[in-house]
Amino acid sequence: MDKMKLRRKLMEQRACLSPERRRANAVGIRETLLDQPWVQMAGLVACYWSIGSEPETHGLVFALWKHGATVMLPVHKSDDDLDWAVYDGPDTLAPGRSGIMEPVDARRGVEAIRTAALVIVPALAVDARTGVRLGRGGGSYDRALARVGPNVPTVALLHDGELIDGVPAEPHDQAVRYAATPVGLTRLMR
Ligand SMILES: Nc1nc2c(c(=O)[nH]1)N(C=O)[C@@H](CNc1ccc(C(=O)N[C@@H](CCC(=O)O)C(=O)O)cc1)CN2
Ligand SMILES: Nc1ncnc2c1ncn2[C@@H]1O[C@H](COP(=O)(O)OP(=O)(O)OP(=O)(O)O)[C@@H](O)[C@H]1O
Image (cartoon, rainbow, N blue to C red; front, top):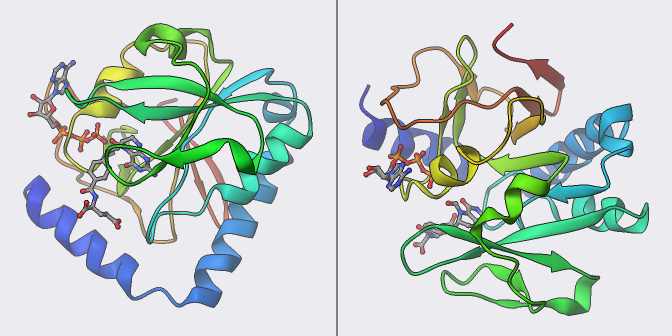
């Protein structure tokens, strides 16, 4: 299946999730992540502020921040690349270019993701064999993940049924090292 068709199918699948299911998924993913020592120990975390039917991250971002981590969120640039700015509590966000909430804090630059100890990303699906992720199609995270070093855990958050076989891969597509779903964490590639 080509990327466009697969994106449409996955979006339709997400649209069918009930509010209860979404809430339960968010709690499952958050608890799975917060149980990992390498998540608890990460001082600087790059995460995202979820919208629509994406696996919800608002509680996760809040919990990481409460536990003392510095959490950076993406700032969507006009060329679709991602700048980064620091979350400092629920009152420090304002809608950005694509309508998604972004920190009002100073922009740290597109290279700031290099300094993160943990990178949590959105995805519509991840290939269970290769870790290749399918995003919205702007190539934003392909660029951002290309800057992340080989020893930094990268985690895509997914609903059940989104860790699949046969995600189409192009040379620029970046893989993630873990997928977190409501049923648990899967280590990919090795
Ligand atoms: N939560 C979140 N933040 C993110 C991303 C993402 O995928 N999810 N991005 C990843 O690259 C960047 C923003 N890129 C975006 C690209 C396209 C659309 C978009 O097509 N929005 C739809 C509404 C989608 C919905 O409600 O689910 C629209 O405007 O019609 C949004 C963000 C940075 N921040
Ligand atoms: N490093 C890069 N620099 C510039 N453009 C890029 C880069 N990587 C990918 N792109 C472009 O981004 C576009 C979208 O790519 P693709 O369909 O793989 O997005 P995606 O990975 O699903 O989405 P996203 O990364 O935004 O979540 C492609 O046209 C590709 O050429």
